[in-house]
Length: 501
Image 1 (cartoon, helix red, strand yellow):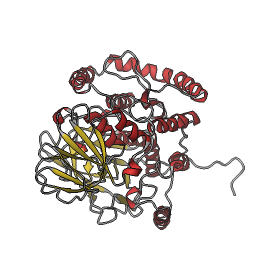
Image 2 (cartoon, one colour):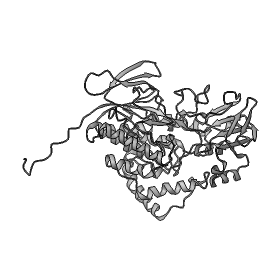
Image 3 (cartoon, one colour):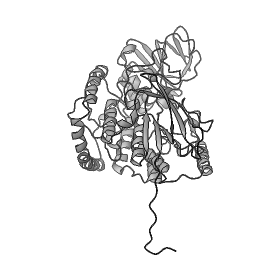
Image 4 (cartoon, one colour):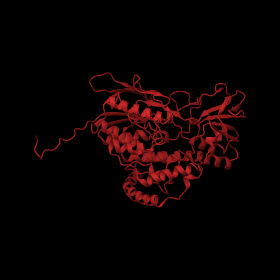
């Protein structure tokens, strides 16, 4: 036996060569955590900048407005008037808060800012932690597959192409983290006559501004949060906008009633029964309208066309699986992971927790359960969801079904600090306000005393920590700032409205 003075030998951490696919919020959160843990990181991003969905692209898939081709050519689905639906005070990285930039040109200091503010924040985060040198922009990943075995350790062959010079490259990595998001590949409904419709059809993925629809009669399939938000934007230019729902009774919520009462050109109808080549749209109750445009606000599907796993990871009715805790496929863990699969979670906070867990498992700081145990956990999760009547397509909906799981995840797997009570209160009060008045809830200022005290602490702790970074940003990266100014000028012309997430 050792003496009382013996100590445990220091943990020998491993450094892996990791490829992160995607430079959006999830990808850059993962890249920072992987680097912190000592891994070598390469981020591959097909766009010309970091940002993912927060990188606004006024272009669309012009000849494929339905987004029926996989993968879509334009990955961005952001529309010009989008404004966040979560408060900035609860959306920051744990050590780099989403502070308002008062008095800075092109910035929006409001609690629920326009989408470009989130992009600017991510750029600041990348700059503060020196992440941009790890990112290969304009680089599309063509194939991710197991490399030919040269040892007992699994590796991955990643083939990519640079979209500028079209040069292809294949490299081998110890691990791959897929962080491509889930708001790019449209999910389309099956409607009788959809192939015969000769007028304009598009998925909301291809919507940017209302001006192209000026004077149109528009029928919208789906009336979720984004559908209602786009309808409020469209009604400024369109002649009539018809929202449709499977059940008009269930859809007639307080917020819907207020929208219809406030705007005479907004209407609610039952779901479409059939589309006719002459422009008629027939609804389930037998009524009809002659429409110029049908827009599908029917959500998105997970899509990883580059990933080859020999069936180890599949997509079935928007369930990506099997994934242990929505991150690791048991038979391929830990060398393959997914960051950002869950829906309705706090971002980037949740992505940061996922990234830290992946980084620590790869280094050996933490261990995963045996493969059989992970599979059993996944199956138990499926059975519990089935028993609760949750459809398969909501497998990865955490915040909307099991909100406590969202807060417990990081604490359970990597000692990640929960958000504070006042932040949860702020989130819940915002959700409650949105359910009553979608147009004005973002501009309410009736915070509770608990929230006001929390905000005072938040500003007091966060602002000094980022002051030094602000000085650094002011004295370097002039090329980026100049480009940002140009983008602001272009975007202001398209943004005379408010914006939503």
